[in-house]
Amino acid sequence: MNRGVSARESTGPRTGRAARTGQYLALLAYLVFLAFPFVWLISTAFKPARELGSLHPTWIPEHPTLDNFRQAFDEQPLLQAAGNSLIAAVSAALIAVVIATAMAYVMARHRGRLATAATGWVVVSQAFPFVLVIIPLFLILKNLHLINTLWGLILVYVVWSLPFALWMLAGYVRAVPTELEEAAAVDGAGRVRTLVSVVAPLLAPGIVATALFAFITAWNEFFFALVLLKTPEKQTLPVVLTHFLGAEGVADLGPLAAAAFLATLPSLVLFAFIQRRITGGMTAGAVKH
Image (tube, rainbow, N blue to C red; front, side, top):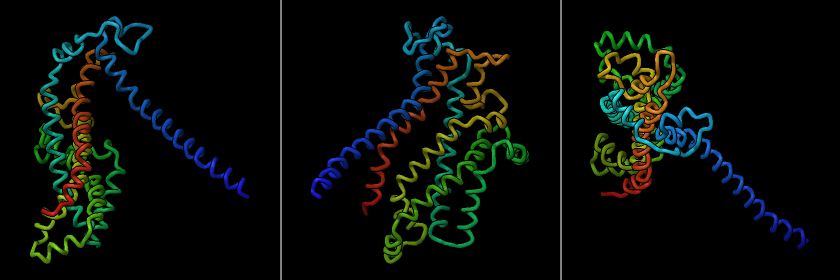
């Protein structure tokens, strides 16, 4: 009897260690899978033309160069396009977060037809592909004289990211104890003041995560920007990157890799900067001032 118990106790830790080792190996394989395109992109961006055409490509450039970056800036207005993308992405993220925070509070706190309709809208809106909505969307923006304007593109980004932002923030609102709102009401605070002073600070991690999602979605978006923006001066960065493709679909690989690498940096830097503050925002929001 004791031998059986001892055998089970000895095999238990072994099984646990084996499971953890398997999980770590699977996580490592997934990270390698995700990192491979980005590492190859960096390598290509610093390779000279002769190495790019080599039949035996290498991971590390043998003769690294910055010529691809200089050529990319000489061929296309990357700074202007990056400015357009930054304006569209930041504006869309801020507007979507402000609207979604108020709507999520109503949706989470008041169970009724409005909450049901909002939930249905979230589900249905995510089922429509871009191609299906682009024609009616184009006609609506044309009637509003918003074609070929950044404000028209910002409006589209806000509407497109709002359902997910609403669904995401509604979960955070439900996690906020209603006792805090009742205590604020006893102190004489109205709905708006309660939302701004009590609920919003506790939603800081959710607001940051939602804003990051909306920003990255708008920053990387290509299809709407391609259709709605016509003049080169107003085109966003993803659209300008396609200009490195020749008439026959042959890519100018070095400058394209350099420009694509620069285009990915803002999202990576923003995520690295913000993710450290998500937990801190949750702690700070729980402190009563």
